[in-house]
Image 1 (tube, rainbow, N blue to C red):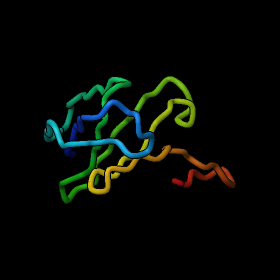
Image 2 (image 1 turned 90 degrees about the horizontal axis):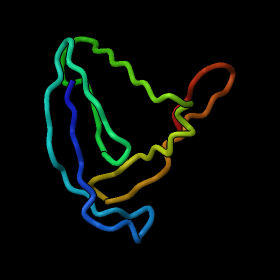
Image 3 (image 1 turned 180 degrees about the vertical axis):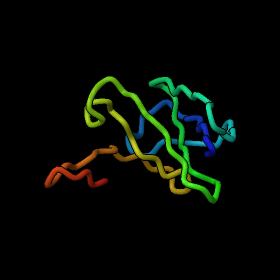
Length: 92
C-alpha cells in the first residue's frame, strides 16, 4: 500500500478550490501503522498485485468527521459523504 501526503499552499479563502501540491510519499507494508491528523491531507492505495486490507478508525460516523475528497490535478475539493441504502454502503 502506498500513502501520499498532500500540502495545501493557500489560506483556504477560495472554498472548494485549494492550491495543493504533493508532499511526502511512503510505501506501507504488513504491520505498518499510519496516523493522519485532522489538518493533514493524505491518500492511500494498493500498489501490489495481492489484496491489501486497511483499518481506519475515526471515532464518529464518517459523515460527521468533515472529510473531503481532493482532485490534485484540477485543484478541487468536495465533501466525502457515504450514502447508506438498503444496508449497503455506496460511495457518493
